[in-house]
Length: 249
Ligand SMILES: C[S@@+](CC[C@H](N)C(=O)[O-])C[C@H]1O[C@@H](n2cnc3c(N)ncnc32)[C@H](O)[C@@H]1O
Image 1 (tube, rainbow, N blue to C red):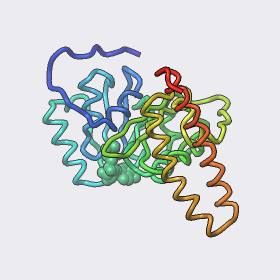
Image 2: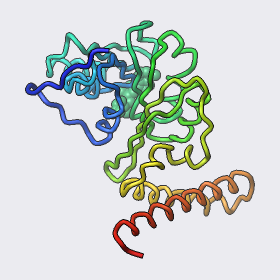
Image 3: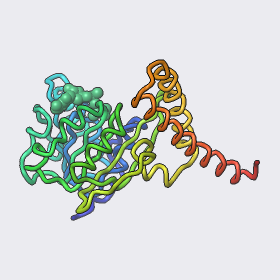
Image 4: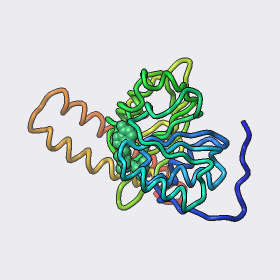
């Protein structure tokens, strides 16, 4: 696959931290589809930066498609970025893209759009997914459908943490430990200050959930308490590692 050179001059497009983390996971030289593209800034940036060779921006609604077409025209990308109005992957033709991006929507919509049957006609080599909610469900759902997690990015924007994940086809889908499902296998391997912030944030809302469920004991309450213990263990591990690096206690 030819790898386009990064252009030295020309218009630049600054993506938000969240969209930048999605862009970082896209393989160079690919033909991409951005489904739920909205403004279309991500496919425009991918082509402008020489990451993608071509892109198709798909959105189900007319107003976002209009805005995306205006952005394509603004950056003079009409020969390499096409905007299509359509529902999910139905707007794409067999063999025209190497991978599919779905970002900025909830996990349920991600799993609906990336259904096994709707993906079959495209046979993409990779998926890059950034779900605003239910990220663990996305990990479990796509692994069940024959995908494996190849890489992940974490970012913080406006006080919220977002996880972007690249999935690749797997001959034997891996079995993830519950901590990997919750927190991300590659994020857990890397750790770092941002990951500690994410763990603290996760711990906070999980504690509230456990407190709420304590009024109704049962399997849901037990599962939430077990998940919180896993987050606590992970947080203790990375906090100790950070202290050791600083030479602290
Ligand atoms: C919140 S925006 C996300 C925009 C962008 N992907 C991002 O990460 O910033 C969600 C967009 O998804 C579109 N959308 C929702 N369901 C869709 C579907 N089934 N097929 C195509 N587009 C869809 C909506 O019209 C909306 O423009």
